[in-house]
Length: 269
Image 1 (spheres, rainbow, N blue to C red):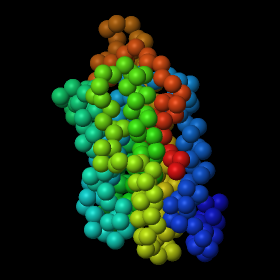
Image 2 (spheres, rainbow, N blue to C red):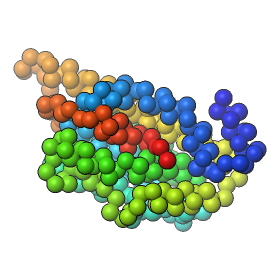
Image 3 (tube, rainbow, N blue to C red):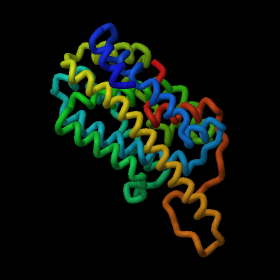
């Protein structure tokens, strides 16, 4: 189905690359929205434990992505969409993790196997096919920009956070207008010259990016389930974890859906 679709849009050349990616990933987009963790968020509930493990996986993913982008910043397919000052999330995630986990946060970061696989894929294509980074950068960064400012304010209120501590991920101080920047980003990406085969591979990579994210959230759900079960054991039988289960925090449905929009790279632009 996907291969048939890609073949036809490549022949017609009637869509920009950004539009082709949105269309090619429509099916996996829907599947991503129906993961167990997405369903949980849509019910309007999240704990700080869930939020912290989400941040850990985002840190692993963005570290790999941004290292690959930095290494290939002069590549003809990467240079047009290389905006480290405006978009980089690694340092912001480091500040958030320090806020939630303390100064020794690096030793407390826990991520599931799917997160490692996703990060490994980013490192791999960064070495052998940098043009495929376009698919990951586009789906992730524009997803972040689509909900960042509003979500930061909702998270601050819902998790009863004082000031902006713990919310750096949502802030893009280098972007004065998210809408204008997204237009610029799409324009730059659509200007990238790709062969028919490269374009086909980028579209497939965008689909794969969603699948990686689906796997990450499925693994996170399993990991959180194990943590929850351990917490319910009688005293003296549970093992310590860097994420002790705190009291549940009720969030608005908008924030819950938005967190996954940011985390999984879902977009509406």
